[in-house]
Length: 153
Image 1 (tube, rainbow, N blue to C red):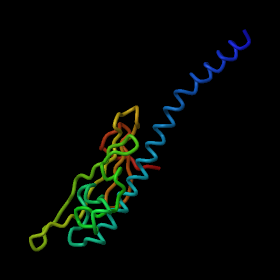
Image 2 (cartoon, rainbow, N blue to C red):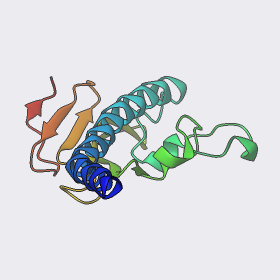
Image 3 (tube, rainbow, N blue to C red):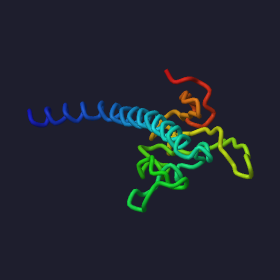
């Protein structure tokens, strides 16, 4: 009888902890998304320095690449880990959008971009969407989309 009471108490405590665990996972995913945006922004700065005629990269694939395939190129710069370069990491989907370019001597040079991070499933893998650009300021969309207007504090 005492054993049944102890088991019942343990079950009650576990049921109270389960919602907290889900919230911690979302918080961890959101923290990972913000850090990943910073990593992409740093890779963009390095890319722009390494390939000045191209400007910024307009795709995550251009920032990624396999080091065993040879030297870095403008289409595979080897600046991001494969998971982040694939566009999906820790419950968030990453994308480079809104690329602004100028044409100089017949060649396109990207002068601006926006990186977005949205939850794979809003409410489950994360609650907020995040965005940054070439200026490095991370903003958020509380609805989980790409309408990022609020600064992250």
